[in-house]
Each structure stands twice: as structure tokens, then as C-alpha cells.
Length: 557
Image 1 (cartoon, helix red, strand yellow):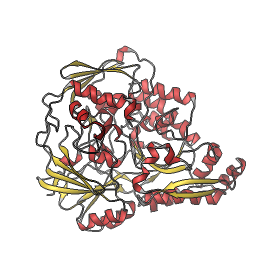
Image 2 (cartoon, rainbow, N blue to C red):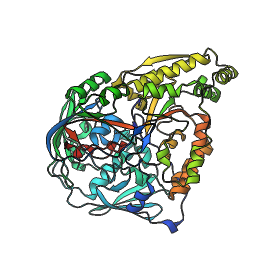
Image 3 (cartoon, rainbow, N blue to C red):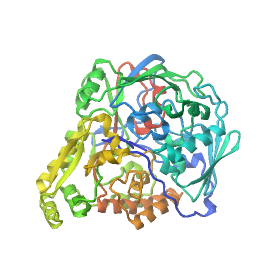
């Protein structure tokens, strides 16, 4: 859902379309919360490494409470309405205020959230039994009516919800008890229950949202249930969260969190070095070295379920010929980009999906998905020949860039350099950090742009989260790619509840997307978080997008 480079869903993610699929035999009708946990792969264990970078699930547990801490974020959210929470800034903040039916853990598994149990009595039915006595920030008590209303907002076409496509296969959402909601699907959908741990599954007070009207998400409270409530929003400067003492779960260790908006990467780094900010996610890669050697804190890395790609947004021009896309891929200096653009913390890849996303599959399934993908070893002469064959020599293309961080700007210049080596005239179009998100939501913002750097993070531990983006009409299918056979494969994978059978189908989708270079894969990239010596407790994995991470932050030992 998803965030850029952009940073949507994701520095790249955003809402994902959920196609319908075939009906599955009723023999495998029960999929409980426990089974969901088993089916979702987690990150590498503590101590695992990725090209020399040690990965962990979280940082040391906090020893006690603190009055407050300050967090640096690279842009101000346009809104905190959960229905459009698809990018890094929104979800980094919102995950601490609004909660979902299910919860993603720091280990990237599912556990109960506002629903204490999720059951699947038949392939097209999901039943969510809610926790009792959960209070909203507006003082009301959560009921099934609030859940029906909240999920219904995602389906309302008037809301333009970023997560709407995840509800494409939903037939009805009904109250079936004071604390029970039943979702009926049109067809079996293995993805829907997983997305109930993301912003797609957020529950807010019906009365509170209706009272806010069109101002919901931009002023006043959010009427949610999380460990923090929305406090003061100083437009253009900061958002403050206040600890919610009526929280149903474990009380937050900090009384307040202040998120400061800092669009300049150097300003964010300097703020962390000086103590003006106690920490931050999405650390500028050019600052890894400074922060590691600063002595004022620790830089941690965790599983990001993230790949850096070049998003193809226009197939009406030269990029409509797959030979041109292959030529660019063959000319890209991925190793140079990883070293300079990702601070050496990434891994060159020819896969659009991360290896961790396939962890639930059998060894043959994982091998089929990740082996035999197109070569990415630079071959300039072959690339030149492909451009010439396509009649594209001298053609002009435009790639978007931004000062969000050098991971964005250096990938854009790497694409430009690759084009120059093979006879393409690639020009840069600079977009302000605060406006970069518009590339995901506004077709007009993409006018005149043929491609842009995209770091995509999965919002669930399933490769289909990324691969469904190439389905006809999918939210992030900006280039308008369409293939009926691919669409049918997405539908089959969606309908399959058995993890290994589903991943086997997805491995074929992966091959198709790779051969057609619907996006150009560049590197895998772990998450990074910096904490100064005063605080600890924040998770290191991408789970922070949907897990109330700030509640775990407290005094360092």
C-alpha cells in the first residue's frame, strides 16, 4: 500500500490490487490465526548478514519510561487518513495511532490485533472475533459496527482509498454479533486475510470519523485505538503523538513522540548527530558511515522485504519495446549503484522480489522462483545492438529524480549514464521530496516521465504483493501493461490458500515479469534505523510500517 524512491509501498508500495480467483475445495476450509502465522515467512534470524551487513529483528529492549523522544521523517504526510496510508511518512506515524484487525510483528509474522481471533470456516468466509473493552481515543468503545464502517470506507469509491483493490474480491462485510464481523468473499482470496494486518484493516470510531467529515485525517483526532493519540500538528514542521492512557494493550514507554519533517537528507543526519532528533528510519545511505562512526548512537539493519527498481511508467514510447528495456537493464552498473547509492548495504539482484518473501516455500519452489532469471551482468555491446534493433538509437527518455536521498538521485543518474552508453538520450526531471508521492497517486504528475526510481516494500510476506502490480488495471501498473495469461496466473495464486502451491504459481509470474522487464530490478535493500544512546526498543524490520513501534521505545540501558 504501500510507499518511492518514491517511497511508497512504499518507498515504493502503495495499494495492491487483489484479483479474484477460483474456488478452492472445502476440505481445506479452516485457516486460523495460528495457520496464518505459520504461512508468513519472517526475516533472517538475528545475526544473519546481507553482504556484510548484520540484520536483526529489533534493538535492545528499553529499560524504562521516558518523557518523550523526537523522530526525523523525510516528508510531511498530506493526510493521516488510514484509507490513503500507503507511503512511508504516513505509515511511520499512523502505525502508532491506528490499529488493524491483525498485527504484523517485528519478526514479520501475523498475530491477533483488534481481532482476538480470525477464522476461515469455508474458503469464501472470514470471521473476526473482536477484543472486548477496547476504547477509541474519542472515549467510545469499539464495536462490530465500527469495524464494518471502517472497512467499508476502504471500499467506498468516493474515498479514493489506496487500499481499495485489496477489497476487490469482497462481497459483503456484516456484523454477525456485538463483537463479531464476517467478511464474505466472491471467491477464495489468500491475500485478503494477510492485508488485515496493514492499514487496509484499520478500525476507527464510526462516530469520530463521521464527526470529522472531510477534515478527517488532516485536523483534529483520528478516533483510533493505538497506544498514542494524535496531538498537535504543526503544519510544515512536526506532528506530535501523546500517550493514550486508556490503551487496551501494553502502555507506551514514552509520554510523547515528536515527528519532525526534514526533507533535506543532510539536515536529517545532522539532527540525529546533534541530538535534535533521537533517531529515524529511512536513513540517507550517504550517512551510513557518518552515523556508524559518530559515537552518539547505533545504526541497525533489519529485513526490509524491499527491492530497488526502475519503475517503467510509459510504454507508449521507446520503452514499449522490450528490447529497449532489456538494453537498459544490461547497461546498468548495479554494483556501482549499491556501493555508492546504498552505502554498500544492498545486494545486486535480478529478481523483483526479495529472497525473504519466498521463505515459506519448499526448496524446489524457491529455486524455481529465483534461479534462471535474465542475466544482469553488464553487456554494453549487446545492449547497443538491442537499441539499434529496436530503432531507438538517439531517442529521448525522461527519468524522475529527487533530493530525498542519494538512493534516489544516484539511481536516476545511473539510468541516465546507462542510456548514454548505449545510444539513448535520457534526461532527468527533478521533483521535490514532498511532491514525489504524487507520482503514485496523480497521473498528471507522471506526465512526461518514462520511468522513476522505486524502492518497493512488501506489506505482507508474500511475493504476490509485488507481482500483482502488473495485473491489468492494478493500482501501480502505471505503464498500463496487460496480459490475459498473467492476469489468470494472478487470479490462480490469489485463490490458493496452500502456501507452497501458491508460491509455485507465483514463481511463474516472477519469471514472466522478469523476462518482460515490467520494472527493472536493481538491488535488495535492508531497512536501517538509527537510535542515539538515550533510547532503544525500536524494531529494525519493515514491520514498523504497521506495528506500533514507538510504544516500545524507551530509556536505553
